Image (cartoon, rainbow, N blue to C red; front, side, top):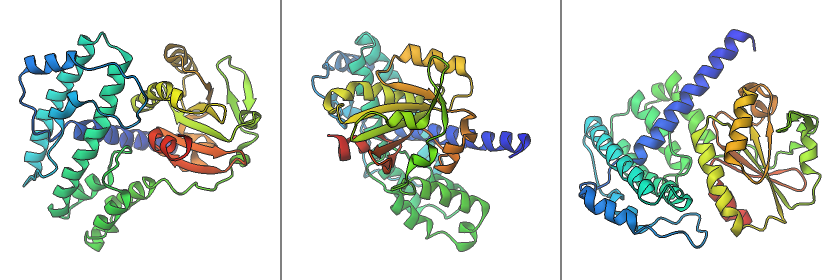
Length: 332
C-alpha cells in the first residue's frame, strides 16, 4: 500500500471508529424514562453508592435505576429519537460527574459508571432496534443497524443480519450496504476461531524499555491461556476495559492465565507515558506500523479494543471486543 492509500485507509478506519464510539456513547445515554428526577435527589443517591466488595462483571448498582430506559418506548421518527437522546446524554453525563465528585473519584465509582453505561446500552439497543424494524428502508437506517455496541447482550449481530436482509436488494448491494454488511459480519467475532498464531512467532515487538523481543517469547511460560488485549493509548474504550481488568483479576486464577497488552500506537513516547500513567499489572508491547501492522491486517482487525484468548497450542479460542464475555465463558 503506498503512502496516499495508507493515509486514506487510516482516515477511513478512524472515521468508522469515531462514528462507532459516538454511537455507543450517544445511544448509551438515550431513552431513559426517569430522567427528570431533581438534581438534589440524584446527588443524595450518589452519596449512597457503596464500595464494591466483590467482583461481578455485569453488576449494576441500583443508584442508576432511574436512568434505565423503558424498552417499551417507541418513536415515530428520527427527530424524536435523536432529541430524546440529546436530553438523556446531558442528564446522565451530569449525574456521572456528580457521583464521581461526591465519592472523591474513587475506583469503585468509576467501575460502577462503566458497568451502568454498558447495561444501559443493552437496553437502548432494544429500543433502537425496535425503531429501525419499522423505519424506512434507506441508507441511514442501513448504517444505523450495522453500528452496534460491542458490549451488547441484547441484540445479536445475527438479528441485525436478518434485518439487513429485509432491505431492498439494490440497497444491500450498494456501497453503503456492502460496508454495513462487513461491519455486521465483523461484529460476530468468529472469523479467527481456531487460527494458529504461531505464524507470527518471528514478529518483532517493542517492550517498555525500547528493546525488541519476538512474539513467540510471550508464550514461553506454562499457562493454559494467554489473553492478548489489542488497544492503544488514544482508545478510551480500550483503557476503560484495562481499568476494569485490573479489578477483575482477583476473580481469575492468574496461575493459568497470562495477560499481554499489545498496542497499535504509532508514537512511542505517548505509548510509554500511557503505560506509566495506567500502571497495569501485565506486560505491554508495541506493534510497529499501527493499523498497517501485518498481524493486525492478517487477523482482520478494523476496530479496537479487540481481545484474543489463546490456548497453550497457540490457537485462538475466543475473540471479542468485550473482555467480560471472554472472562465469563473461559476464565471464571
